[in-house]
Length: 212
Image (cartoon, rainbow, N blue to C red; front, side, top):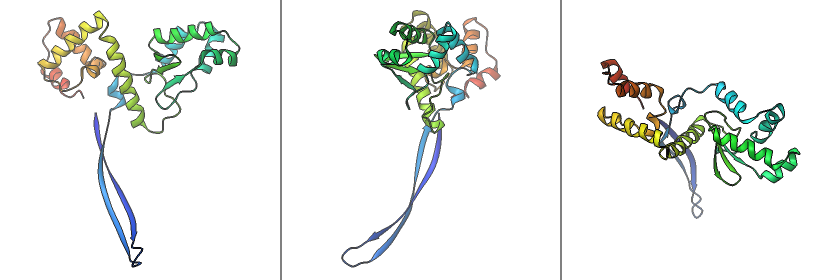
């Protein structure tokens, strides 16, 4: 996480109604905004992620077109709000087809179903058109990571990895949330080496301390 310091300035005028006197008011206020670097949030993102997702979700040329129509409109939180019955009627397809597409999207981590009709679309694959700043989008990426981290805790295999990651982080006094560490490719490579019993070099240890 990085801190960006900004200075907000203000200029104004106070008017005394009784006396008619006017006083100019000028000032500034320093504010600090925190945000996460996109490159540090998760694995490297490439167009191949989207291509692989489409290949898993859409199994025909018709379904590829439906994929585009369904996922083209996302809100500022990268959420898809969909009434399946209405969308099926609009696109002249059955509810079953749209439901299958949505289920496949969830199964390949392209989306998380939050509740009926609301899907959180993976912000490491697709960026909605409603974002006007990287800072806001980075917050949505962090939210995605935290949600998937909670899901991983319920998986016996992944939860075991998380425990080992916590032990390694404690050993080297890494002040970084585990949810970020387990999505860092370098950290995972170091964890794999550590689990195999191989000693870490001074250079690797120094690099570990620079993860944020």
